[in-house]
Image (cartoon, rainbow, N blue to C red; front, side):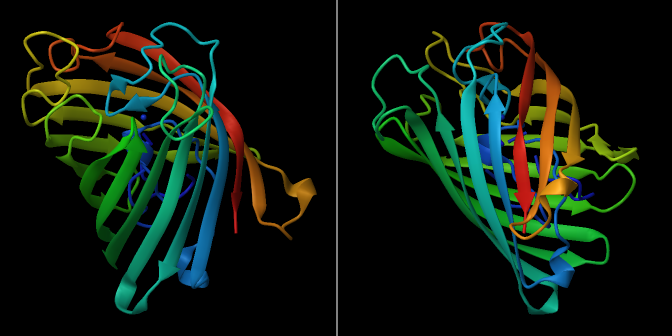
Length: 281
């Protein structure tokens, strides 16, 4: 971009720190919710996700310009570990991959592996408030885009999060360094054995030319996008828990994007969907 916990981290598309269980992976917002083992009960917890996605959305940008196309899926596996530390601190390390044949030129990584994201972060929790920071390296296009995210999350009914997403190295993004501010809200509820969540995000680009090329004249700052989703997780209890607690996950997200702030998208309004398997251990 870029789970069942109240402090669920976005992509959103999706590579950010999980303050407790989260992930915004490459800025994406495509990871379905999955039950997460409470960090307070185990010193080390992990989440493995094997996801198929119709789009790669990175902070409102339709990376592969899929638009209304829902047929050409990509494979996005991710793995994240959270390490409990004393005094309510936690460390997070993870990786996310983008595997598809949508690239116009051969992948610089090899085969259909278009991008590999790596991240590490630290978070501190006081009562219901969690403060976190993470560094992300998005490896694609023969170089590395560097990201520093700062995040606040509050554990309550609507699980509000506020993320300051900072691009500190352009890499192959074809845009300037700059910042995006994202307000996230989400509510999780149970419908029988199914866990449902309704993530909503509002974002603004704080700097011009964050999404500059290939559009002549650059891109504006200001309101960038709104996304509204419905994500579901169904536990596969018949598999047991010897190799983690597995769930079938999936959902859909609708995006409204501002054409002057994100002019590279083929459509300003579009739908994405995702499905796959997730395991917590």
